[in-house]
Image (cartoon, rainbow, N blue to C red; front, side, top):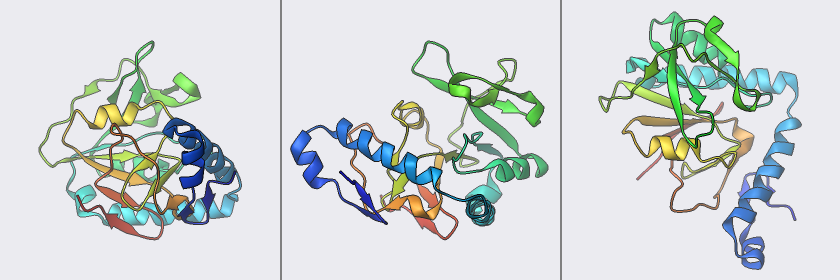
Length: 211
C-alpha cells in the first residue's frame, strides 16, 4: 500500500487495519528510502546548496557558538558544506558518536574532517579520542537533526533507533530539522516519545514550529 503521495500523508486506513504505529512507520520508512534513491545528482547538489544558504541565514545559526551536526549517509540530506562553514567560521562543530552496545549517543568535538572514521552503521563518526561535547541551555547551541522525512508540525521520520528523540529530550537546545523539500509531508504518525524540532529548514523554506 502506498503511504505517501506527493506531499500528503495517506496512512489512516493502513493504521486502522494493523492498529500498530510501528507498522505504519516501517512502511513509510521503506517508501521514503526508495524515494530518496530516485533523486538525481544535480537535484541533490541544487537542494544541498539552497539548504546551506537557508541554514546560514538563520539568526540561531549565526549566533551559535556550537553547531551539533552529522555526517550524511549516502542519499541523506547533505550537510557537508554546512559542516565546513561551521569550522571556517571558527564555531565549534560536534558530530554524533553512537555508543557501542548502548542505546545512547553522544556528540564529540572535531576540529577537522581528518578526525572522522567509519563507525557504527558505516557512518563517519568522530574518533573516540575527540572530546565529548556537553550542551548548555544558553541559547548558543543548535542541533541539525537528520531524518528520512518531516511533517509540517516538525515531527520526523527517523530510522527507528530513537537516538535523537532520547538525546533531545535531555537538553534544552534548539533543534533544527534539515531535509529536502520533496520529503515534507502533511502529517506523520507519532508516539508519545517522538520529539518535534523547533525549526524546519528545507531548500525552499524555513518553518518555525508553533508549540
